[in-house]
Length: 302
Image 1: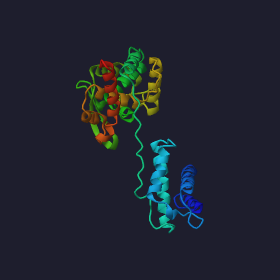
Image 2: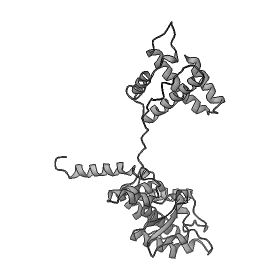
Image 3: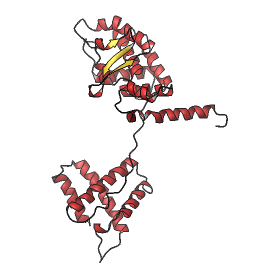
């Protein structure tokens, strides 16, 4: 029974061009499955065949992975995918007549919850940026306020041009994924900080009146993604926030705090620029945890 496995692995290399690491993962998964089959399949005339494996055996194997082995759902899903590919190969090569794995269900790997800051941590971060005297310091404060006010992606942030910012009406216009345009509003302090940066700090960073970028480095050029990450890292250190902070962490914090504050999910979807509300729904797990915590704090019997 092992020979078809080896033929299948060779097929993955020659026909599919699988990498060494992917091939080893398939090898380990299928050899583990082979050991289970050998231990649970009765022999016929002194030998076992893949033709004897049925859906019940496959289902029991998956149960053993999730139960006794305690594998994560993502790992079980990967092993099931390897088994399905193997049985499809057996059918194509004529080793078996019917694929017993066609109806085999695998756990759907859960999406990991996005990391976010508490409101107190965000306040520490923004307060630590406040009052810096240099043009770069004013710029960094404006970046932090803008990211938390809008939930912009880092690419959207560094792509902002002067024409995209309207401090009088308190909003910015950004281009999201797929070239989709959206308007995002700013709270009063973000408007004030951004306006101060544009009037007083940005002119000191460049003498080139043709430069359209909102956020500039000390050479008067548009900031890069790496530069923004470095700004956030330095800001977190200055604020004494131990969590790793990236532009996406501030984006997740924006979305989570909006929902915790009562904003409708559909509105948050629009503000984030998500094409599907399903993408936004992951934040409801975070807000449900928040509601439970508040319940346990408030209820006299909890």
